[in-house]
Amino acid sequence: MIDIDGGVLALAEGIASQYEPPIPLEQIAEDEFLHIICDDYGSTTFDGLTWFEQNTDEFYIHLNCNPSKRNSLTNMKGRFTLAHELGHYFIPSHRLGLITGELKPHGSVNFLDNPPEWQIEREADAFASALLMPSSSVKDFIKGRSFDFQLIEAIADRYKVSKSAAALRYADIGDYPIMIVFAVDGKIRWVNRSKEFPFWRLKYGNGKGDKVPEYTVMGTYFNEKDNSDCRNEETIYAGDCFDTRLETDNRREFFEWCIEYKNCAISVFWEK
Ligand SMILES: [Zn+2]
Image (cartoon, rainbow, N blue to C red; front, side):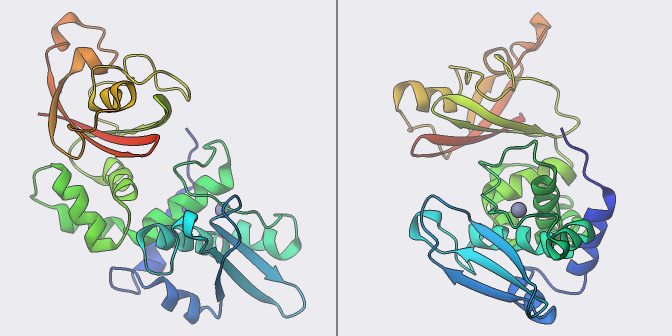
């Protein structure tokens, strides 16, 4: 885990506080005299890229609108990409790096596939998450509401973010412990959890490449190509899913909500 400097989050929240959700990213760019350019940069390159033009002293944000990238100025993924690039502009060390050339302009890719060890990318993602979903606003929005997946969908809808981005934000600042698992081809890509989630690890581990537990909705999707339990609240048992340690924990009941897409799946787990 990389620690995110609290200053990065405070910076994002401070900017967000000047606007009403859903945060108008194009307006922020306009207010800062940033140029946003949407173009097709191909299917195998970046989602977004921020560039400082030395000749004119201007910043340009390039958004890759190749159809396979599914980025647009207004859709959920494009908004996260744009907010991430705004992070590179607003975070003082990133901005200075871009101006001096010490931080090479880099193509940023969607956080689902980002290598987590890359500090500046994590910082820009954390900035994006706090900018799009300011903590005080989200906490007000979820106050008094019991947790179910519809709450994640409501956050996504209110703040115009993807469900995965909303779930990650909820894990961070929500009041009911959840675990989020993203996997590709039956192997774990990453795991994120609320601090209070009762189990630390999945049954076969949380590391990149560890096997998805088979008796989960996600496991069934990967192993049997069966998605009939996806996009639904399904009951699973702790013993099948988590590294429980104690025999008595094995029958604890959890819900899993799995969203599958081609060779990928993301699941949210929470206790009944
Ligand atoms: Zn980036």
